[in-house]
Image (cartoon, rainbow, N blue to C red):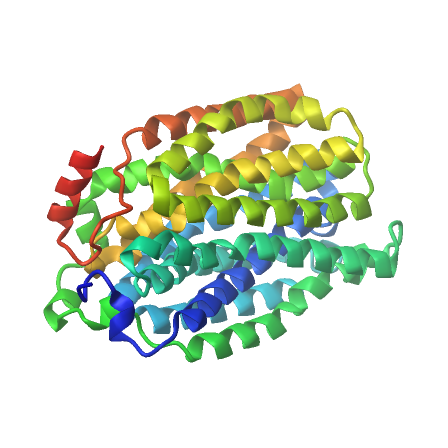
Length: 447
């Protein structure tokens, strides 16, 4: 096998270490991201927006959740630039530090009752920092895996950073569940200080993640680049100039994925407690179980994308999302824990079928000298379209028209992504070190 086809041959770092480093980093980053979503559903309306009342406070809380998605493209551009210029490894260490500092700081913000409007302002600023970090993290972690992996196993190795969100959902739900069980379901202690524990505990996870990432070498594809390639045109300019079509198609194809994911991991936590009437303990416990099924679906899709292609898996997920969105809230509104679990699990499984192959799909679509920027921007734009708007719109739609309206919104995202996915190139067999133009020509033939 050629050097281009088998980048592992150019590095002494074992793939096991690469897999652990990529998975550990995304797990920590998304743990920090998810505990914010859980807190936004359970406590932030009362802690930071008490004057707005229950409904308006929930909308405001999820609006701060959406702020991070707006910051993601900027994070992808900033960290993508340095990732394409100075290396994947150094940039990933920076994103991990930024996320860790911002998350711990959120856990230290006094409530609005104590410092007034300064509390929600500080919350928004730190949420922006989280968004910048995640905007730079995901692409770097997937590049760490795919740029090391053999061509015929890129989907398999790209699975490891993709497992980060499901593991993070387990950790975030589990941490909040433990705190909830410790302080009691009806205790004021959860609102006063209990919710802060998961945020402060992030510091320990970040130290573990830094240790793991320092032990990994720079990826062979980046290390093998010529100095001229690294110092050429601005990576962001290169992406928009050479591959704008692939950038926007990828973003549109994954918008549904984000909408389903953050409805499942953030909004349904609020809906299950406030609308359905389930206890926090029940909702968090069911979230743990659903996250395990989500991990299995992600692994299944990533593994099979090496055999049947990334594009087919994404299209299949989009097709399932349309009826899935329509039946979600009628199912959950049955009001039983089993119905809630089935609805949540369905939401995450549909998302996982797209998410599994996305870890290889996006890096395969872009040229090495701007791959970090291109993959990160596509992922971030999809996050703005789907993840940034869905939870906020859901809170408003449910308040006005009920949960069924949220289901129609999800089905609409499914239609959008299905249309875009039909025009996606198949990237499974691409030689990632070929020129952008050659890759595009091969893609057009494969479609």
